[in-house]
Image (tube, rainbow, N blue to C red; front, side, top):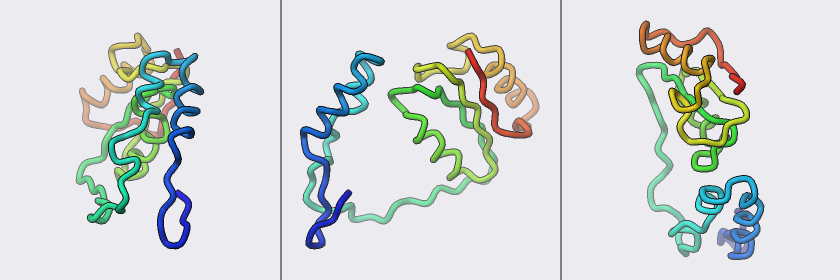
Length: 130
């Protein structure tokens, strides 16, 4: 957001419209839905609460489709950074929200199954391909 005279300037309606049109060809249903105006887009006041800091006692496994239009890759990467000691599996070339057991990716399914069987995370972040 840009600031003008101490007031945050939010993107206008046309910016949302452009974002919707930009994703329409690749993801005709969920792309526009995910890019649409949210209820708080034009609220005049900033949030009253400070952002919540995420803390986790157990390292997590984050599984993300690189082209997910409901929870975009940047969101998954931010969650991975926020969850200390986590590992991330990214499925390249997939646009779906469901990845594990839904896409038929042996790489993703094997890594998640190993984690569920042993409780151990992969040694490093993984990028799997379709």
